[in-house]
Structure formats: structure tokens, C-alpha cells
Image (cartoon, rainbow, N blue to C red):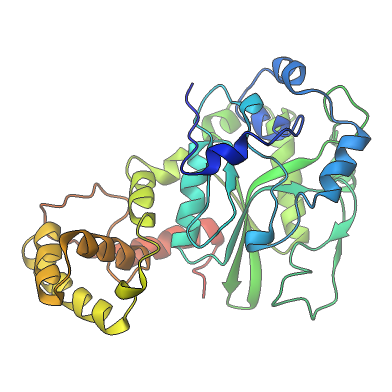
Length: 341
């Protein structure tokens, strides 16, 4: 089993020692909870208070602290974990599976304002997740019911932390903030294997969890979708990794005139010849060295200034194919219910 820890995050991970953080996410992956409990300990009221005092589950952007953190004791039985900043963030994001990382990258690519992973669905009444947002703080905070009340109304068991009398703190894989037609809004994304859902009876825990999530999102006035690896397919995840590596560029490549000239030459040449040749011609035209030209191409594609079908294999020797914007819009509608403004 291999865990992915990009960059300088390795040192930070070594300091993470929270107990029993990943039980909720591991349930979706079919992990042996008895083994996890023995390895990670029991969540007591004291442990819960420590997490709350540390701000776990609160904040926005770089100030957000996810409820669950990746560390070496909560390694899943399948799928690589990832700890890495998303493009535009300084903080490390914690994903319990690679598919969560890829979908989070896709959300940023689709112009989400914020992506909060491992977001807690509090068992007790709590403020709306946007109540303290900088752009909505002038509004009166809305009190939302806790998951215990929601579970009671649905007639299902809310549940306790394993081996404890502490109410279980469920977590949503991704809570996305975006600008909608009617203003700031939220989208909840649950990543669950569809075959697991289809094979479950109505009272199986995974179905009950999704029912509670859906009602909770209704109280947040948020959309709620359940997706699996089928959304990413064979190529989208890899393309997201590749193009997001060009999200940041040196100041010399940020000049609007340079980007405009590069884009114009590239699109004309790549449409007639190939993507590689388009980069070469744009490089010569703008007098950029090959490495800078390749970085700028990835940057403009990540910013959706250059159309690329992110769901298809990236064939550098083939002409540039149009339709990327339409595909991005369709993915946004599937994930968020509409394209972000």
C-alpha cells in the first residue's frame, strides 16, 4: 500500500497525532473498524473538545482545518491518500483517497471559490457553514439542526464513536463554495462507489448516511450529489494533475500582453498542426524558452483560456480539439447543479 505525500508535506504529516480521525471516511471504503480502533484509540469527550478548540471543521480557504487528517495510522485498505495544497491554497488539503483529490482539483478547475474536504456534519445545532464567510458575514447567522435531530426524523440511528459514548461526527467528502445565480452558495459532494450503493438494502449504513447527508444539505440550501470514479474516468484525473502543475507561474509570465500573444499564436498553430507544434511556434513568437512556453501553456489551459477536452487522452502530436468549454460546463452542472459565476 502506497501513500502519496507530495512536496514538503512529509515533515508536517509526522507531527499529526490525532486519534480516530478517519473512522467516518473509512466506513465508505469497507475498512475493518476493529483493526482501526485498536490502532488509533477511542474518541473521548476530551479528545472531541481538543479538536474543537483547535478549530477543526471551521474556517474558509487557507484558514479551514479539516475534521479528518491523513496520518500513517489511518491508511485505507484501497486507494492512495493524498496530502497536498490545492492550486491557490497555502494550506495542505487532506484526502482519504486519490479520487477525492482529483474531484477537488476538478472543482477548482471549474471555478469553485473554496473546497473544504472532510467537512464535519455536526451532531448538534450549529451555524450555517457560510455564516462567517467574509462575503456573507453581514447576514444574520442561520442556525441549522444537528445530524442527531435529522437522524431521528428519518428514523435511523445516528451512531456513536467506536467504543465511546461520544456522538459520531460524520464528515462530508467535499463541501464546495461557489457563486451561483442567486449569490453565494454551497454544493455537497459525496464520493461513494456506486456498486456499493446499488447492492445495499435501504437500511444498510451507507444508505442511511447518504440520506442524512442529503437532508443536512437541504438545510444548508446546498445541492448534494453522489459520484464515484466514473466521473473522473480514465483521463480526467491525470489531466487535472498535469494542468494544475501550471496553476502558478513566475511574474514574468503573468503579463497580460504576453499571455494574449501566446494564446493567439498557439491556438492558430495547434488547430492546424499539433499541440506540440503550437507550443513551439508560440514560444518562438513570444521569445520564450521551451520550459517557460510549456509552463505558460499549462497555465492558460488551467485557467480555461485555452480549450482542452480534459476527459480525453492528451495527445501532444495531434491537433487541438475544441469543445473543452462545453465539457467543463457539463461537468459543473453535474457537480454543482449549475456553472459557477
